[in-house]
Image 1 (tube, helix red, strand yellow):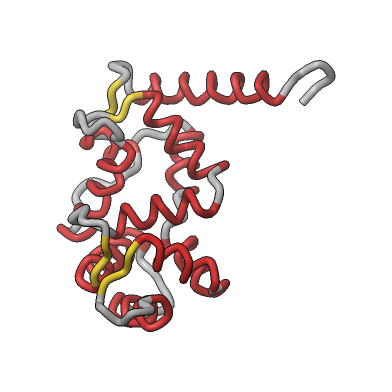
Image 2 (cartoon, one colour):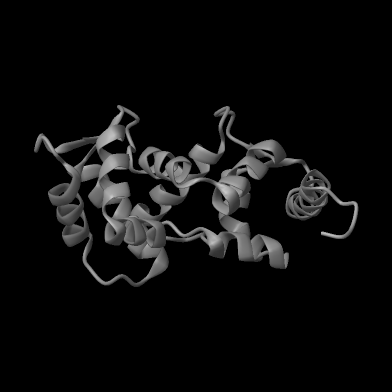
Length: 186
Protein backbone atom coordinates (compact mmCIF):
# COMPACT_ATOMS: atom_id res chain seq x y z
CA UNK A 1 0.00 0.00 0.00
CA UNK A 2 1.20 3.47 -0.77
CA UNK A 3 1.23 6.48 1.49
CA UNK A 4 -2.26 7.55 2.45
CA UNK A 5 -3.92 4.28 1.39
CA UNK A 6 -5.79 2.42 4.06
CA UNK A 7 -6.46 -1.29 4.29
CA UNK A 8 -10.06 -0.50 3.30
CA UNK A 9 -8.83 1.29 0.15
CA UNK A 10 -6.68 -1.71 -0.74
CA UNK A 11 -9.59 -4.12 -0.11
CA UNK A 12 -11.87 -1.98 -2.29
CA UNK A 13 -9.34 -2.08 -5.15
CA UNK A 14 -8.99 -5.86 -4.77
CA UNK A 15 -12.77 -6.30 -4.73
CA UNK A 16 -13.04 -4.14 -7.84
CA UNK A 17 -10.58 -6.43 -9.63
CA UNK A 18 -12.47 -9.53 -8.46
CA UNK A 19 -15.71 -7.92 -9.68
CA UNK A 20 -14.24 -7.32 -13.15
CA UNK A 21 -13.07 -10.92 -13.33
CA UNK A 22 -16.39 -12.26 -12.06
CA UNK A 23 -18.38 -10.21 -14.56
CA UNK A 24 -15.99 -11.19 -17.36
CA UNK A 25 -16.72 -14.86 -16.66
CA UNK A 26 -20.35 -14.30 -15.83
CA UNK A 27 -21.91 -11.23 -17.51
CA UNK A 28 -25.35 -12.00 -16.04
CA UNK A 29 -23.91 -11.53 -12.55
CA UNK A 30 -25.20 -14.94 -11.52
CA UNK A 31 -22.94 -17.94 -11.86
CA UNK A 32 -24.73 -21.22 -12.54
CA UNK A 33 -23.40 -24.63 -11.58
CA UNK A 34 -22.64 -25.34 -15.24
CA UNK A 35 -20.67 -22.09 -15.59
CA UNK A 36 -18.86 -22.80 -12.32
CA UNK A 37 -17.76 -26.21 -13.63
CA UNK A 38 -16.83 -24.79 -17.02
CA UNK A 39 -14.74 -21.91 -15.64
CA UNK A 40 -12.80 -24.32 -13.44
CA UNK A 41 -12.45 -27.01 -16.11
CA UNK A 42 -14.44 -29.50 -14.04
CA UNK A 43 -16.95 -30.80 -16.58
CA UNK A 44 -17.34 -34.46 -17.58
CA UNK A 45 -16.16 -35.92 -14.28
CA UNK A 46 -17.10 -39.15 -12.62
CA UNK A 47 -20.24 -39.07 -10.42
CA UNK A 48 -18.35 -38.78 -7.10
CA UNK A 49 -16.18 -35.91 -8.29
CA UNK A 50 -19.25 -34.25 -9.75
CA UNK A 51 -21.04 -34.58 -6.39
CA UNK A 52 -18.12 -32.85 -4.65
CA UNK A 53 -18.16 -29.92 -7.08
CA UNK A 54 -21.91 -29.60 -6.64
CA UNK A 55 -21.48 -29.62 -2.84
CA UNK A 56 -18.86 -26.83 -3.07
CA UNK A 57 -21.20 -24.84 -5.32
CA UNK A 58 -24.10 -25.29 -2.90
CA UNK A 59 -21.99 -24.08 0.03
CA UNK A 60 -20.88 -21.00 -1.93
CA UNK A 61 -24.54 -20.40 -2.90
CA UNK A 62 -25.40 -19.11 0.55
CA UNK A 63 -29.00 -18.16 -0.20
CA UNK A 64 -29.62 -21.44 -2.05
CA UNK A 65 -31.13 -19.80 -5.12
CA UNK A 66 -29.14 -21.95 -7.57
CA UNK A 67 -26.68 -19.17 -8.45
CA UNK A 68 -23.50 -17.72 -7.01
CA UNK A 69 -23.78 -13.95 -7.18
CA UNK A 70 -20.87 -11.58 -6.68
CA UNK A 71 -21.43 -11.14 -2.93
CA UNK A 72 -21.45 -14.90 -2.41
CA UNK A 73 -18.41 -15.21 -4.64
CA UNK A 74 -16.42 -12.56 -2.76
CA UNK A 75 -17.40 -14.10 0.59
CA UNK A 76 -16.01 -17.44 -0.62
CA UNK A 77 -12.82 -15.79 -1.91
CA UNK A 78 -12.33 -13.98 1.40
CA UNK A 79 -12.78 -17.25 3.29
CA UNK A 80 -10.16 -18.94 1.15
CA UNK A 81 -7.67 -16.05 1.26
CA UNK A 82 -8.22 -14.40 4.63
CA UNK A 83 -10.41 -16.78 6.61
CA UNK A 84 -9.35 -17.76 10.09
CA UNK A 85 -8.71 -21.43 10.64
CA UNK A 86 -11.88 -21.98 12.67
CA UNK A 87 -13.93 -20.41 9.84
CA UNK A 88 -12.25 -22.69 7.32
CA UNK A 89 -12.83 -25.73 9.54
CA UNK A 90 -16.54 -24.87 9.79
CA UNK A 91 -16.63 -24.64 5.99
CA UNK A 92 -14.83 -27.99 5.64
CA UNK A 93 -17.30 -29.50 8.09
CA UNK A 94 -20.24 -28.25 6.00
CA UNK A 95 -18.63 -29.76 2.94
CA UNK A 96 -18.12 -33.14 4.62
CA UNK A 97 -21.65 -33.12 6.12
CA UNK A 98 -23.27 -33.93 2.79
CA UNK A 99 -26.75 -34.62 4.20
CA UNK A 100 -26.69 -31.50 6.39
CA UNK A 101 -27.69 -33.30 9.61
CA UNK A 102 -24.97 -31.66 11.72
CA UNK A 103 -22.76 -34.76 11.91
CA UNK A 104 -20.24 -36.36 9.61
CA UNK A 105 -20.41 -40.14 9.34
CA UNK A 106 -17.82 -42.42 7.75
CA UNK A 107 -19.85 -42.83 4.57
CA UNK A 108 -20.01 -39.06 4.00
CA UNK A 109 -16.32 -38.57 4.68
CA UNK A 110 -15.36 -41.49 2.47
CA UNK A 111 -17.55 -40.22 -0.36
CA UNK A 112 -16.24 -36.65 -0.25
CA UNK A 113 -12.59 -37.68 0.03
CA UNK A 114 -13.03 -40.12 -2.87
CA UNK A 115 -14.44 -37.24 -4.91
CA UNK A 116 -11.52 -35.00 -3.94
CA UNK A 117 -9.11 -37.70 -5.07
CA UNK A 118 -10.92 -37.92 -8.40
CA UNK A 119 -10.41 -34.18 -8.94
CA UNK A 120 -6.91 -33.76 -7.51
CA UNK A 121 -5.69 -37.08 -8.87
CA UNK A 122 -3.14 -37.78 -6.17
CA UNK A 123 -2.94 -38.33 -2.46
CA UNK A 124 -0.64 -40.21 -0.13
CA UNK A 125 -3.39 -42.46 1.20
CA UNK A 126 -6.56 -44.12 0.04
CA UNK A 127 -9.95 -42.64 0.86
CA UNK A 128 -10.56 -45.54 3.26
CA UNK A 129 -7.24 -44.92 5.07
CA UNK A 130 -8.00 -41.19 5.31
CA UNK A 131 -11.49 -41.82 6.69
CA UNK A 132 -10.33 -44.38 9.24
CA UNK A 133 -7.47 -42.15 10.38
CA UNK A 134 -9.77 -39.15 10.87
CA UNK A 135 -12.24 -41.16 12.93
CA UNK A 136 -9.50 -42.83 15.00
CA UNK A 137 -8.01 -39.46 15.88
CA UNK A 138 -11.04 -37.30 16.54
CA UNK A 139 -14.17 -39.39 17.16
CA UNK A 140 -13.73 -39.06 20.93
CA UNK A 141 -16.91 -40.88 21.92
CA UNK A 142 -16.52 -43.58 19.23
CA UNK A 143 -20.10 -43.24 18.03
CA UNK A 144 -19.16 -43.29 14.34
CA UNK A 145 -20.16 -39.65 13.84
CA UNK A 146 -18.27 -36.38 14.17
CA UNK A 147 -20.01 -33.31 15.52
CA UNK A 148 -18.79 -29.85 14.56
CA UNK A 149 -17.20 -29.49 18.00
CA UNK A 150 -15.39 -32.85 17.76
CA UNK A 151 -14.20 -32.00 14.26
CA UNK A 152 -12.85 -28.54 15.06
CA UNK A 153 -11.30 -29.51 18.40
CA UNK A 154 -9.74 -32.68 17.00
CA UNK A 155 -8.26 -31.04 13.93
CA UNK A 156 -6.95 -28.02 15.87
CA UNK A 157 -5.16 -30.33 18.35
CA UNK A 158 -3.40 -32.36 15.66
CA UNK A 159 -1.00 -30.39 13.45
CA UNK A 160 -0.52 -33.23 10.96
CA UNK A 161 -4.26 -33.68 10.59
CA UNK A 162 -4.73 -29.92 10.17
CA UNK A 163 -2.15 -29.89 7.39
CA UNK A 164 -3.69 -32.91 5.67
CA UNK A 165 -7.22 -31.49 5.73
CA UNK A 166 -6.07 -28.04 4.65
CA UNK A 167 -4.14 -29.49 1.71
CA UNK A 168 -7.00 -31.74 0.68
CA UNK A 169 -9.29 -28.72 0.40
CA UNK A 170 -6.80 -26.26 -1.00
CA UNK A 171 -8.83 -24.00 -3.25
CA UNK A 172 -5.88 -21.94 -4.46
CA UNK A 173 -6.09 -23.66 -7.85
CA UNK A 174 -9.66 -22.34 -8.16
CA UNK A 175 -8.42 -18.82 -7.44
CA UNK A 176 -5.56 -19.16 -9.92
CA UNK A 177 -7.99 -20.08 -12.69
CA UNK A 178 -10.21 -17.12 -11.88
CA UNK A 179 -7.28 -14.70 -11.48
CA UNK A 180 -5.72 -15.71 -14.78
CA UNK A 181 -9.01 -15.04 -16.55
CA UNK A 182 -8.82 -18.43 -18.22
CA UNK A 183 -12.14 -19.85 -19.26
CA UNK A 184 -12.47 -23.33 -20.65
CA UNK A 185 -14.60 -23.72 -23.73
CA UNK A 186 -18.09 -25.04 -23.17
